[in-house]
Image 1 (tube, rainbow, N blue to C red):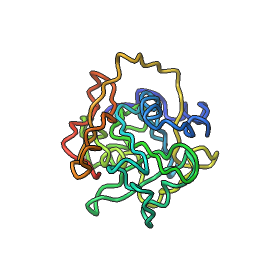
Image 2 (tube, one colour):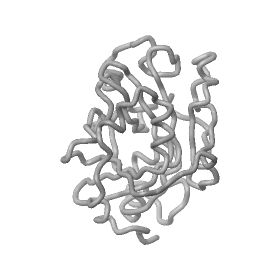
Image 3 (tube, rainbow, N blue to C red):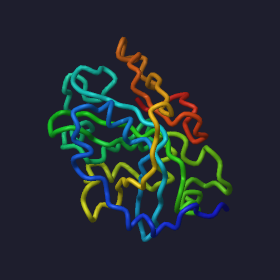
Image 4 (cartoon, rainbow, N blue to C red):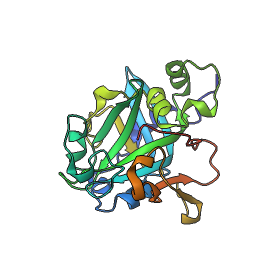
Length: 219
């Protein structure tokens, strides 16, 4: 099994992204800014960390690809109406738990889906969770598999990513991404959304091998 690229405990020394990072009114800008940030989880004393390499933006009320389009409130979408900095985790096909970051102000229902991450720490734990014996892109290159590898499930919906005791958070580690290295595309699996399906709101790190193949998603 591949060794960690960075010791897991190192991530405890990095400050968590603050609320102001998430409360920007521009969800598309946040989706781009999340690229290169590091997603960290700590469950049962196991720390896992992975760099965000692919994201998708969703915005109520006008975006018909958004779960909360037209400000639709259901038991599932209620978390989207929290203030920026909360986790929105939902289940698709009864199998896959998808992790999103809520953005902007309370009642706005904006969110960014994390579509793929590049493993940095806790790789052995990730492999065990995924039932794999070697590191390959299937480990975390996709929204459902990355959540499983990182230990994120529906029960974590509504978690405050900014809280000191949250087991899920994001950090800035000094990684810098030039605008030319951000690739833009349309979102995946939202053909039902009509013209909104063509919004260029999917972003990834150009040339990164951990970006998903984008054959489909739970949206």
